[in-house]
Image 1 (cartoon, rainbow, N blue to C red):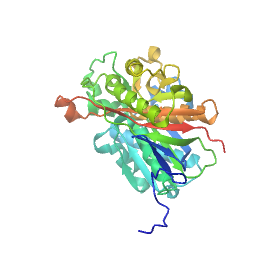
Image 2: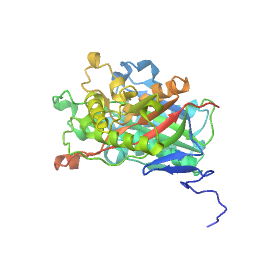
Image 3: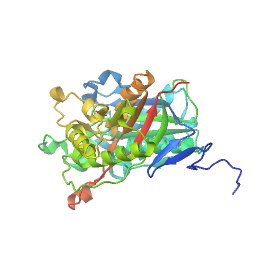
Image 4: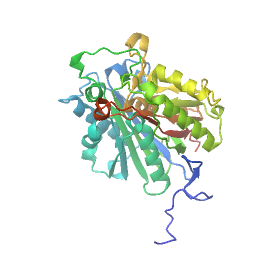
Length: 357
């Protein structure tokens, strides 16, 4: 190996690309930039409080496809196309794609992005996939293995119900603890250099652990994921030596109203109070009183489209200077659920800061 080659990563000294903090966190010395993003949503999301902020909305949730899975694939394909166009780039400028979704073997990503013919890293973090893809893309760019990486994820209400619960035609009842899977896709371009309209800077990441509190109810995703969110927040604050007040917002992905209260309770046991800083994408994306979405929104697309359309806008405008973005995921499958297994959770944290170039 050529020792002069400057390709080392996670060497804890000044001048390196990144520094390992504590047990689970990485602080980038060579910070990656989010230079573009795009969000596409379905009809229900377009009718919600953030409807005017999304780049594109489909008023027919089939998006012209023959089935729900193909519809979700089209979401990813078009979201990436919009993100690349907004950055003034072409697909040839992208070195790597990090993508995933909720469907079996991540078929929304593989079928939706196959036509781009770009090096593809398939990911699965359930509804934490937006944070996972940004973490992986940020690390690869910071380490110098890619100049530009695309990070993409999606979900679709109908394909998720079919995959994890019951087909829509069954007409099953939903308890108040249930969340509504967001139909949407978010795509982000992460670059080693600022772009023409840089949206945010990635300061660092905290990679979550799998946390299992023994919950088995697939209609209560908030309870499954809240322990993992609490664990990652505690670890992040310890690793970075910070307090909640050091952030303008601490934003979870899709805990919903049930999961949010559980998160507050779990953190209170550690003498941590984030009630002033906390926001949950699943709570904000819908108007529950008008749209009857029970505990709130969920799905990979939930945190992704809110990040692109709303959170990055606040950071770009300087309203929020530093945000801890924490997508949350419930790691279940049809097989594990039907075999009576518990539903573990995971949450990955990404620190986003305002670009001041």
